[in-house]
Image (tube, rainbow, N blue to C red; front, side):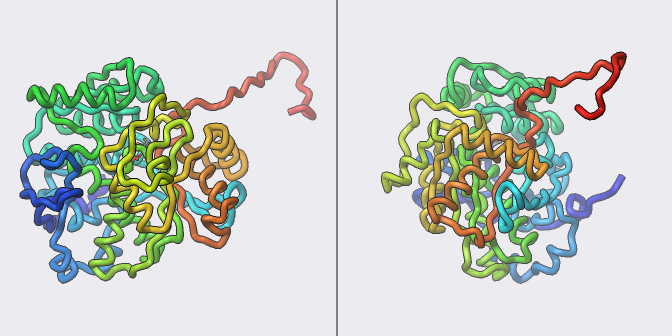
Amino acid sequence: MERNINLLEARPSFVTHLECSLTGELYPADQLHGLSAAGRPLLVRYDLPAIGKRLSRADIERRPTDMWRWRELLPVRRSEDIVSLGEIETPLIPLPRSAGPAVIVKDEGRLPTGSFKARGLVMAVSMAKALGVTRIAMPTNGNAGAALAAYATRCGIETIVFCPEDTPEINVREIAMQGARVWRVNGLIDDCGAIVGEGARQGRWFDFSTLKEPYRIEGKKTMGLELAAQLGWELPDAIFYPTGGGTGLIGMWKAFDELEALGWIGSHRPKMFAVQAAGCAPIVKAFDDGVEHAERWEGAHTVAAGIRVPRAVGDFLILRAVRASGGRAVAVEDHATLQAVDDAARQDGLLLCPEGGATLAAYRLALEQGWVTERDRTVLFNCSTGLKYPMPPAPRTLDRTQTIDFDSL
Ligand SMILES: *Cc1c(COP(=O)(O)O)cnc(C)c1O
């Protein structure tokens, strides 16, 4: 077996403490935390000057490219706590026909469990293991539950997962197959979250809801670190990110700040586009209204299940990043999303998930509206393998016992 030195070498983490994202209140590292006292996400802080003295871009470039090459900027202290299933660096794939010459897709569908939820969950589960957690519960629209189930099972942590009853069948089954107890609930993801919260208050399990524990952001942050290294330490001009809870967008924004503090990138930032479905667009509404906190979106519906999130606890962090970047929150209709998935597959041979399709649809809208130009170097995020989602039927059959009309094939 190939041995990955990123997982074997003793490399220090430079975590110093955690900080409330709203009030700045400080919390000690190396203890189990949920939300801050103000009920907001906690952010992990590092001794960046010390990292800068010890580590250079060239050191990073010499290491294998998987996400553990960033160990010093991640919270796991001991190699033996890392519960890895092979978190590779995901490729950047151009979409010349369906999007244009300046557009690349970061294809996160290549990660373990087939989605970028693996980045966040490998980190959060590794930290839970390090901190002695034995039972975890989570509300999910599918992919997060699958990643939790896989990583937790791998290190012997018990998991109970609650999903909306119309969660894609394949997600419910992969969660069960990978060792979690999964329950279909007649409600949306925040209704599932209420059950998880109640159980946590009763001391039955640790609450792994999006942003309610501090380490998923750190895992998702590696998308930003990786992108910088892949693009020669030069960030793109625009990033389109399908936004549910927004962990990835918040994480990437944090990554860029940390990289700049290290002197590894300059002050140029991409315009961040938070992409939502028109049928569930609380962040877009808050963006348009000019407010920092989003109201719950009633009657949420969209084909893109991963971004059907009516309420995000990190709403203000998403909105701050989007506004500071000069980007926007953008809503796209489901028909535009499905058309984009179709175009990318039929014209460029890349099968996107619906959420990935939503970013292509939003890019097209942004071009039309003049929010980006065809020359802007643009990254779209495809967050999951397209193979998990329904595809149009392919009904042609051929009877090999009859004469075959080869001209018609
Ligand atoms: C979870 C998920 C998203 C949304 O990611 P957040 O970082 O939680 O906003 C988008 N697409 C897919 C396929 C997902 O599973």
